[in-house]
Image 1 (spheres, one colour):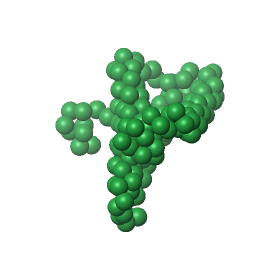
Image 2 (cartoon, one colour; image 1 turned 90 degrees about the vertical axis):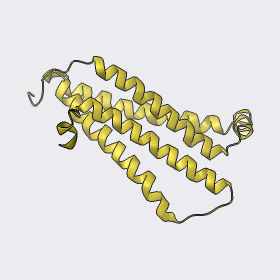
Image 3 (spheres, one colour; image 1 turned 120 degrees about the vertical axis):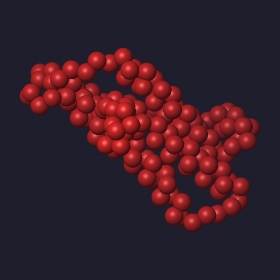
Image 4 (cartoon, helix red, strand yellow; image 1 turned 30 degrees about the horizontal axis):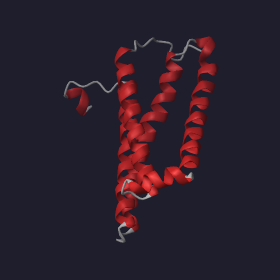
Length: 155
């Protein structure tokens, strides 16, 4: 309501874009925490609340909103297919993480990361953050051109 009063309409696509960005922020926080740990300093486990909160907020904004949006935009005959595509996109994302994690185990990649001044884990977190922000930017640009249709609950 506060955003609407300020003249900003939080559409489904804007919420999803924000969710991707919040996930990127979570990766930055985790990367920064890892840099502190790699420096030999310790902090309480309570610091994990911040990245978990950011990641949870991002997940809610992307997954819940995305499923509802996909269902509302699909014509009645395609709703099941679109839900399958949504699950397929989750699978592709999980495979992407698998590929990145496997690449980090390569000696040449590990050497390049180490020469950057970051530890492998911190670098990985910052890489995921950069990827999330690039995805949020691309998604946000796509969202500005998307014209919604009204197939909500017609099945």
